[in-house]
Image (tube, rainbow, N blue to C red; front, side, top):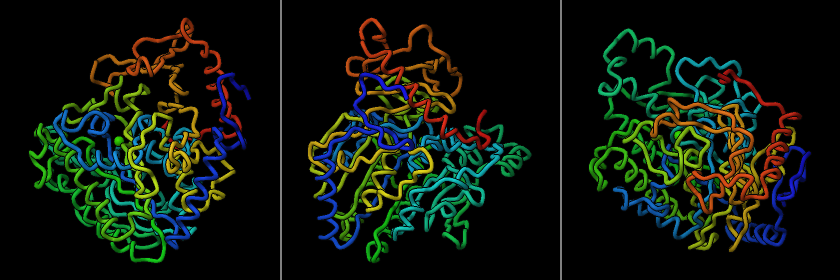
Length: 507
Ligand code: CA
């Protein structure tokens, strides 16, 4: 495979993403994990707090917060007392990120390249030949729970409790997939037309709060038939997670809890307790305040249950803010937004918190891909050897980066895809685009956009001097254009041996 002169990453296996090697740091991290396990007599719990569509610039710790009308004291405190990651990358939309973090694989490999929407005809269950993180953790003795949004398929065989989670309490789709059934002011041509509403009910996403168990019953706890019920969705999820933490903490086994908020994805309706609680009073901002408060309560529940010191917590968003739905959308200081391969679409807040294990006050701008949570979680659970070898794994084990003081990221590159298009790559502070998303209206990043090829030279930006990707340094000011192009070719070549999967979302 082509290797550029800029790269220092090492490919140790044909099916694994090349990684930077810091052997002293990696050995120290393993010793730290072993010491913790001896001390606690148990492997660590893993808790992910995944917010839907929150912008990079929304939390105070990332430049937003009170300054933009929605204070986030809990996220800010956890960032301060943990590791703040300023170059964390998601996929550009919900389903791709949610499936990628559970498989360690790019959406183009699993076929889950975009959100599954009403009327989509899935030709193959993408999970039928994927190996999920909860499945691997469950096999190794972990209790696994998804509380909140799924959005990776809702037919039997594709539900969270079919693909590895012991228990699921939440909603199959995004808030908008539910609220479009009931929100008259925004969807009058649908909600006020009984015939169309019936058609949607037949083909669209479930509008129920679901409780399902692996190999057991799946029940509908509540039907969301009013905006007011949707408004209270996250409160119900939080109450479930807090109670579940109490129960799981008493058990002999460690646990993996993915708490996936419904907010702050449009349409946001303020819950009773949080209406007007943000300085801005806008429903989106009230939702940010609500989510932040619940993060505080969930972390407090871990503390009260006596397991905070043995729990790795990661807080992030599944993609950039949805500016298409502004003002019911978040803030990013970067170019573009949800759906886009520009930084605004894929650069998200990242906070790693682990009391007494991650030293407070750390901050790093080195690269972290949310898919790295797959490999990292398996290492934390003591089963790095369970990473599948019969398929390509894009994640990298970042345990040592996260838990060692001064830890360096083992990731050198982030590949950015837009559905089936390889768009761009970040490598160190550089970002190269071989295709670009063109906006035809300033605020629209999903609707009314086109993807186009670049001209003679790829568009190359230096994010340290131009974080908004406005002025390409190109071949004139950068020696690495050809090297980075070679890295993209090497990435593309991994698909020859491991072809992408098509599940019917290709258009
Ligand atoms: Ca999302």
